[in-house]
Length: 86
Image (cartoon, rainbow, N blue to C red; front, side):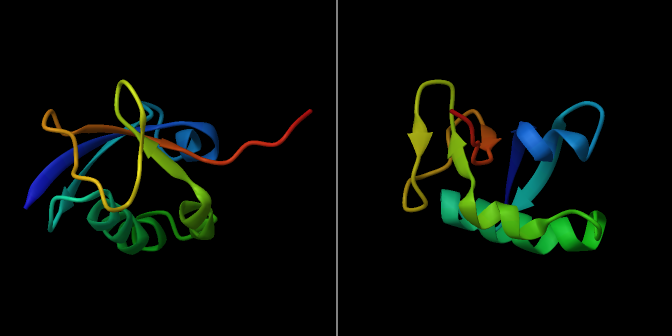
């Protein structure tokens, strides 16, 4: 298990005042993190639009991370929901 600290942006930042959550991930890829969040969100925050997770990106300090990529060594990831605007 890996402990990952997820920095929350956009709609996700409404989940906790600190805008950070720690989550246990069984695996070492972004896809594994997405899976862990898919299970946690409806259980811990049932009113949250958990489907937003499917359209959100993850990033480390330097770049957007794809699902097949490994979790950052420092265990810190940001979740970036899609935005709209002109």
